[in-house]
Length: 249
Image (cartoon, rainbow, N blue to C red):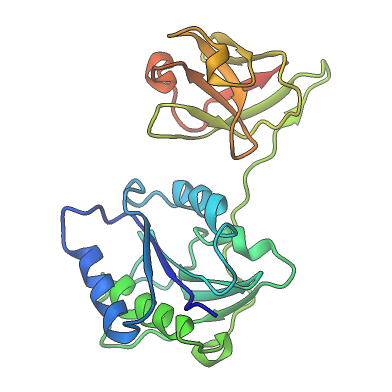
């Protein structure tokens, strides 16, 4: 059996030494364990964006994988540090909702991690989470690492709602690096119109069905309806931000 990997998702960026310090701890404690950089470009302190990112990938990795997630604006406060076992994978990070996707599985187990008084109050990623991730990757059981924790923060994607006329009302969840507008709308029908920012976008199946510069909507790889401009930036074109209203009809 191959050694499980440790994945890294942070808002640290790569211009400073923070990611390097995380990796220094990991390779010192678990030198044989592969480390997979997922992204260090989560917008700073953006728990919601981090949560949606975790939702996309955490099940895509093999059983035994340890996901280390550090988007932690409350570092050093009373927020708990936690580790989760869920569907055969492990997640380690702050209890601020960023790890929510793994908490809704029926077999999810959570422990609260002790925080050494000597740990930096501004860098639990290095001093608390990374050592735990290394121990899990080396075979430690979840219960060895902390006390059972029954009240973790669980954040959910808000559901859309249908009005009396049959129109589905939702909101913008996030905007990706292409400027695509990802909503909470769900549909299996690749026809109809999406209204957003005073504009209407026809639903298509692929980007290739749109003309260059055309505003369209489609079902993205996450399953949610996205609004895009072919070879352009929909969010910039519409001046749209997270939380904006969107209607499917």
